[in-house]
View 1 (spheres, one colour):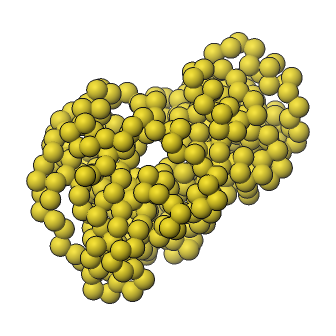
View 2: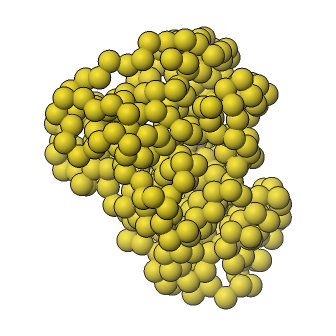
Length: 346
């Protein structure tokens, strides 16, 4: 079968590999659409892969075409989205249903061969059934959407809260739509790119601010937030955006840190003092799973997509055939694209 393999650092190519032999309780999935994640970029360009050659791809949808021994809840023809975390099931975190914190997990598309291939082996537990109304492209967005939903659920939801999304890349724009649909009182988007803010506005943000403006805190104070129940979602993953969250937070706000930092974060004593003086609650969010596996995040995602409350078309960079996909990814040279790059097999 054909795959797109990272043969070595900074080298992608179409490669012929063996079709997987099914293990017990696994299925063979014919991949329809697979997305490029921001976490894939260092695996391609910065020696970040666990091994070479590797077939990446953890944001994908497809169709079950073969079932292995012991599979009881899936059949040929079922359309699925992949929940790529394969938890060990036996560590203390797994025993308590905190699968995102598993200490001995595997992961389809980084620690195991992934969905950038015509076929991929997927454990039955990692197959999330798609409703008929959900397209294959939408199915490829389940994983990133649930990344944004995980901290929302950890924070107790957004009903009646003022939600601020700092960083409106793919995860941020999905978060804007999700919190709007889930009953947030107001939705505010913050970024350094006006074109991204314009897109956030079109997708439901009530207020948009460019964080390069020196008076952003004053601007935010001029809009009618309730201010008593503020939830800030940091998705940009930069030291500057984390500091921005502390600066703009209202007293007793909750700040969810989602974006992964690739540079050190240094706080002045005044910046750290904001956490104390405002009595802020800060927590980290890692991956997107809970009990029962894969978690309520995935059920909420299914409901949002089934009700047509999430626009994925506006988030696309493009849908590419294999050779075009390689050209588009290599052209990034390690930088993040403005939209989701999808791979589609003919």
